[in-house]
Image (cartoon, rainbow, N blue to C red; front, top):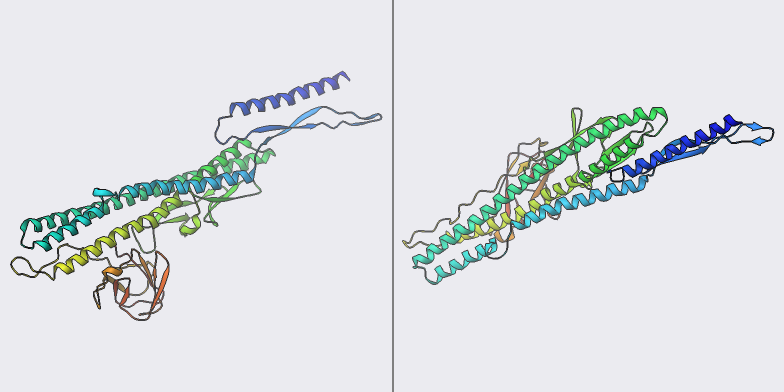
Amino acid sequence: MSNGLQNIGSGALLANQRVLQTTGNNIANVNTPGYSRQSVLLNSIEGPFTGSGYYGQGVEATTVLRSHSEFLTRQVALSGAVAASDSARSDNLKRLEQLFPGGSAGIGASVGNFLNAFSDVASTPTDLSARTAVLGQADEMAARFRSTAENLDSLGRDVKAQLESTANSINSLATRIAAVNAQIIQSQGNGQTPNDLLDRRELLIKELSTLIKVTTIPAENGSLSVFLGGSQPLVLGITAAKVSITTDSFGDRDRSTLSIDRGDKSFVIDESTIGGGAISGLMRFQNTDLVDAQNLLGRMALAIGTAVNAQHQLGLDLKGATGSSLFNMAGISDALAADTNSGTAAIQVAVRSTPTSGVTELAPSNYEIVFTGAGAGSIKRLTDGQLTAFTAVPLQIDGLELQVSGSAAAGDRFLVTPY
C-alpha cells in the first residue's frame, strides 16, 4: 500500500513539475515573436479492478498542447498581405506625387509662361527681346519635361530593384519553410507534436504573407504546402521552388511579371491572381500607376510639341524665311512584338496628320493589337479595355496612325506605347 501511495505521489509531483515547467516557458517567451502559449494535458491513470472496485493510480502528463486557432492564423496572414500591398503601393504613390509639384515649380506653370511669352511676340512681332523670351521659356518648359521624365524613369528603376529584392526574400523564406517541414516530418515520428517547430513555421508563413499572398494545405505527414496565385506551388513538402521578376511577353522594360521556376520550367503568374503582399502593391504601381503617369506626361509633351511645331512652320522669320520646327521631337517608338509572334509584321506609330491632325484626340494609354489575319483583328485601349475591330490597315485610333509593314499571322500580338 505504501509503495502505491509513493508511486501516486511521485507521479503527481512529476506531472505538476512539467506543468510548472511549461508555465515558466510561457512566461519566458511572452515577448517571443510567433510563440504560441502551451499547456500540459493531464490524464488520470486508470486503476486495476479489485473486488472492492477500481482504485486510481494517480495522474500523468500526456502531451503538451499549443493554444492555436488555424482560422485566426489564416486571417492574420490574409490581413497582413492586404495591408502590405496597400502600404507598398502608397509609399511609391507618395514619391510619384512629389515629381509633379504645383505652383511656379510645376510643369503647368512653365507651359503657361511659354504660351504667355508667345502672346507678347504676337503683340510686337519685331521686338527681339520678346522673341528671346519665347526661346527662354521654351527651353525652360522642355527642361522640366525632360527632368520629370528622367525622374519617372529613376523611380521605375527603384521599384524594379524593390521587386527583385522582394523576390529574393520570398525565395529565402520558401527555402526555410521547406527545411522546417523536413524537421517536422522527422519529429512527428515519435508521436508527439513539435510545438516550437510549428510556431517557427507559422511565423515564416506570416512573414511570407507580407511579401506575397499565399494559401496553405497541410499533409498527413505534418508538412505544409504553400501555393501562390491560387494554384502555383511554392513549397511542396521539403521542396521549394523559386520566383523571379521578368519582363512581360512584349519585352516592355516598364512592366514586370512574376514567374515561378520549377526545375527547367518557368510559369508566369497572372498579376490579377497574386492577390496581396508587398510584391502585389509594387507590381500594381509599376505596371499601372507609373505607366499612367508616364503616358500623361508623354501625351502632354507630344501634343504641345507637335501643335507648336505645326503652327511655327506656318510662320515667317524676320527675314521672310519659312519657319521650322521649334522643338526637336523624338519619334514615337515602333510597337513591341510579342515573343510568340510567327509573322513578319512590324508596326510604325505616328501622330495622325490626315485628314486632320490627331493632336487633340490623343489619349494617355497604351494599346494591345491582336491580329486575326494579315489585315484584320482588334485593338484594345488598355486604360479602359475598349475594343475596336479593324478589317484593313493602316489603323487610326485616338489621334494615332499605325502603319503595318510585313505580314501578320493570326494570333500575332503587338503593344503600342506611344508616349
